[in-house]
Length: 107
Length: 353
Image (cartoon, rainbow over all chains, first blue to last red; front, side, top):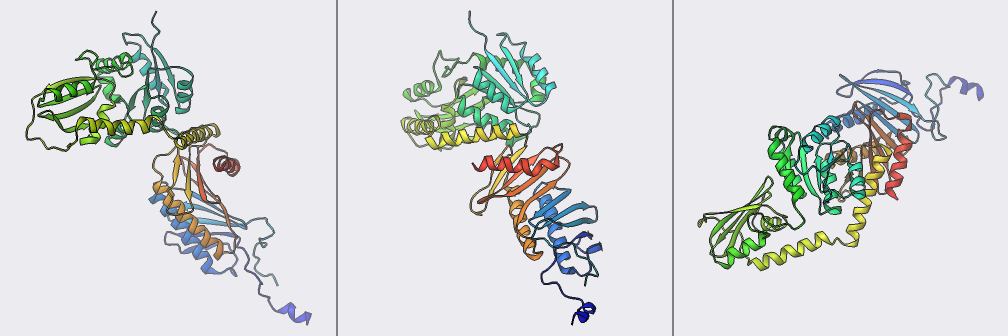
């Protein structure tokens, strides 16, 4: 049985925290990314949308921001506003709850 | 020998402080002039020494002039206050008058009308608490009005105190209307009664003028006295609130933060700010940010959010969730970003306690 496992890719039991960076345009579309391709695209889209909304709402509140650091127990999202959108860095935090960064060809 | 009066000038611009010192040194009574660059220093100096007049700039970083004036009004009711600003803003003017300042001057006016400015300041220096109106020896406004009513006169009384002007309409021995400090009717009359002095002139009556006051003078006085009693004798909780406010402003200045805003979890509770005037828009953004963080935390399985840091060229902003409120703390741009979280946490802990 062990030899069969060698050829099959196992699905992770829990969702891994993303690691890497991606750029988005002003509409929230992901332009380039270094986040592992197994990480769901929709979650990157959701992250981009929330980040861009935060920048926009801060501007509307007369508190325009050029950068945002969103800290969670297991993840750090660093976003920098750009003229045409934003660049977003995702770094899992070094806590027991956080999984190691996603690697593409892990069995 | 009579002691020299003291004037305190508060402005964050060192050059302007020098200009003021030069201006005020021309006053005939030669008062002692002290200058300070921050509201905190002004308050501590006022605590330590007796001053007659405070000249206070309105636009300042951290604790602004309106905040200083609101504290001064409660802690030093005998201090005469002059608001100075470089901006011709009606909102500032009315807010300053609402805080009970004696005079409001634009800095440009002050430079152009130096003589008048100096006369006004000299007049404030010369006024004792409860001083009378100069036209009628030691008579206060109430005596003048009583006299008009007793004689069943009809007239328009125009009262001038510094740059403030008030009017009282009297018809057949009855007060029918008043205007003072941007207010009309009874509110204006109540404000007028708090004036410590000034000059008045009796103008021809205006019989067709609208009547907004229908109460007797005694009724107006009773109501005014009740209001004054509440203002002069704050309740224990008001005193505690004031002490807390001053302690927190001191902490803010000591730690080097620019402002603190607390946004309660309960949406119906209002946000409060220290070192910042308008907190509504910021509070609305904070509530949106909290929701965004909760959504993101759940979607990405990233756990609860611990804090948000935002930056622009003017400040670092830190949002820290607490049990019943979120703290928003602003730091100057030069603050070491590695220390922001710890410094903010320390400040939030002080606030919470």
